[in-house]
Image (cartoon, rainbow, N blue to C red; front, side, top):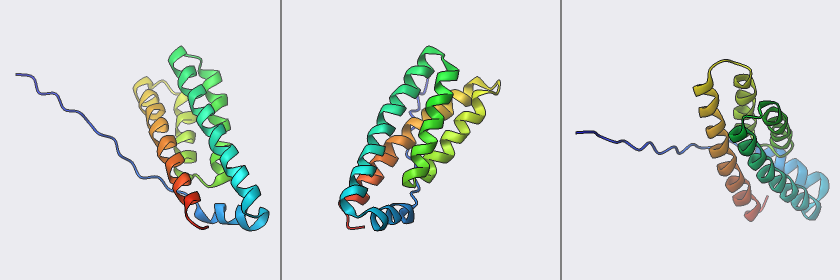
Length: 126
């Protein structure tokens, strides 16, 4: 008899709430909302580009897209996303394909959770 186990990955994400607060204080709520929403859109598009490049084996393109994600993460305080994206960059030049693939998958999960976390914060008063 074969036993199949399904692993459910549920990871918490860390946000630098102070980074978001600085944006809102510096620019005011209207411009800050616009900037954050633009960053979230760029993140969603960038993550789709990462996944497409990964599927197609275009590692140099993938690295370029991941570097863009790191910039977005730094801009709006997505500390977990930035850390995992740097891990993907590190593994992209190593010869550990299973670790690289697993970390790209983790980046997808972290980016999704980060998007949700920032949306939730935006719904609250900063």
